[in-house]
Image 1 (cartoon, rainbow, N blue to C red):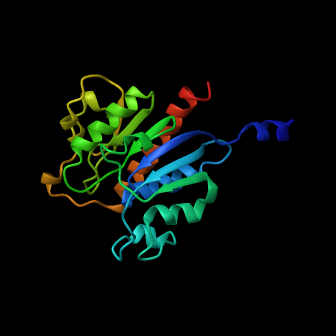
Image 2 (cartoon, rainbow, N blue to C red):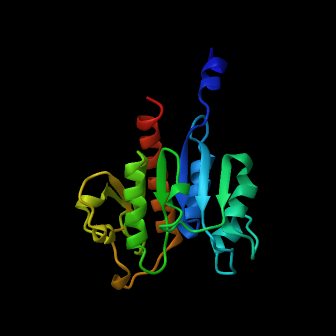
Image 3 (tube, rainbow, N blue to C red):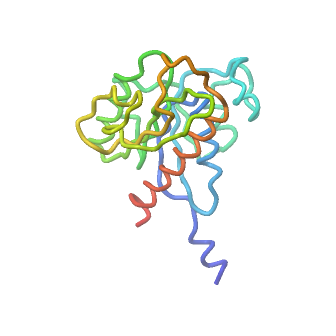
Length: 203
């Protein structure tokens, strides 16, 4: 009886992870470590290579000079489809699955994030993104981007549906990004992703 139930608890659903930096790699590992269920296929997008200051990648076994997506693929094998490219307006069609998690950072990410969200919504893909990763001991909040007080409000979305996770702090606040905060954000992103999957796919 127990064995029969265990056999039914298999990975299901597909997720696109856009960005595999300090936060994205945490999300990837946490998501793929889910046991007795979880994600069947993870599509990952990032054109960056691991550098000396990418401590979390190196702690997890990544090698300097290795593409971040190749490292994750090497670790998890066939459950991962790796794209050595960033998502842009020209390749939005690469995004697929049931959920898209947006973990891009650096520079002004608002325009491309909004394009990703709009594309996903048109294609019935649920979206989860970030909402500030700065802070020493900030509470990590989950909200809808339409109602947030954090950086995600700059997306100026016209309807509900984009889940955001973060500290609601801006870079102008002058606070650092700690590994503890990134761990908390990654945890809540994975939890929100699993909630969406179970509603969207498993019901």
